[in-house]
Image 1: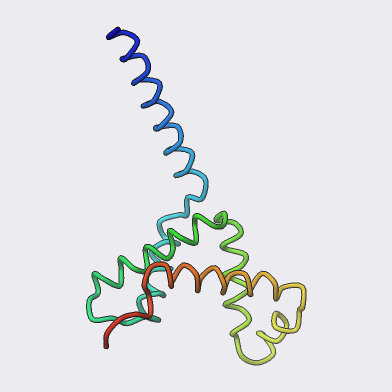
Image 2: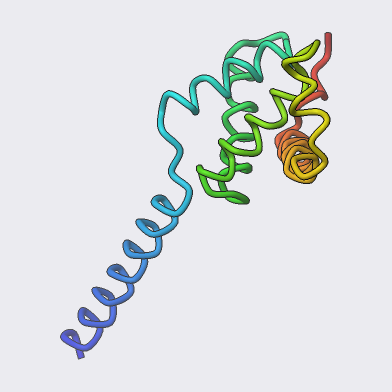
Amino acid sequence: MKTSFRRHSLRALGATILLAAGAAQANDFPTVDRVLYVQECTRAHPGTSQFEMTNKCSCALDALAREVSYDDYVTMSTIAKAMSIGGERGGTIRDSPSLEPQAKRYRELQTKAEKGCFLGNEIK
């Protein structure tokens, strides 16, 4: 009886470890990109506590990472940021209708992530 229970427990533990490892690798963003996102987010959402805002912004990036791969994140965020460049340089991106759906999706995912992590609800 003990051997059967032990074998079942080991299988369950092994399956849990494999699932956790797979989830961690699925959308693993490089540390530097995580730091840059959190820094940008905390500047965009100043709150009363740096600790609180760091956690909320980290939550938002984790939510984005659950939705898209790192490569898709880079593509979408680059397009969205490039569209905000003024003048002719930004016009090339803004005038390309094929890029708008990716920028729109990024903004929607970002809004959903921020709302889910209570960003924008800070008391000032």
